[in-house]
Picture 1: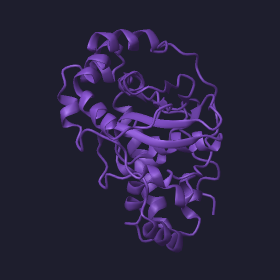
Picture 2: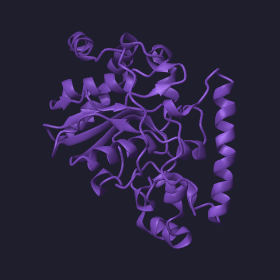
Picture 3: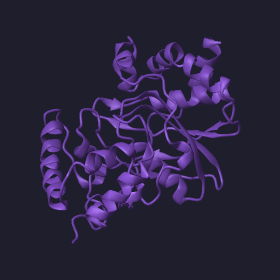
Length: 285
């Protein structure tokens, strides 16, 4: 079984050298996760076991072979659970092709291939992440600042399953879900190896959203380009801790400086063509 999956993934894995995507202005996030995707399916609540795997570093840096070994070792219990719960067939598994500081993370795409092979359905090979977000090592405000954006064909009325190795605040999955829903398809589930967020949920509680809307009006959209109702559970839980929109703006500005220092120490210089741009109307009052 392991050998057949290994060969299958190697044959189907897209080429690692894609053409450079054109610069795009990031759109506001309008759609929340559907209520049916309240929480992701996951293996672990901490990334300790994932990082302890001997193939983790190589897989995170872009080695498909290492990612296949890691997924073959860790994912079977997750697949067994999904099979026990009669996971719906004919889904489209889609993973963000994220660029991390050390290279292109191979784990999400290999996991999507593995799930496709084990659970039936199909795997998306056209939707790509058009911006680098460098969320590894980022704090909550940095993650809100550095939103992912996507491009590529979406199957009309398709039933998509979001796949990633780790979700922390759920922002990247939320942007992918928004992109898919904006293009006329649906999101029916999310599957990750590690759900590291504080709440363990994707959908924000209604009472928290209502309080944020009462407290800030439309300021969250103006600051981040995210409709308040489209915040994830952990994004909303983080922002509810601020007393005023000015506090949020000040913390956001400080986080931008911290991001440049953090990535600059790794020799990474952010610029607009790499997608690190403010959302439309950012900081407009």
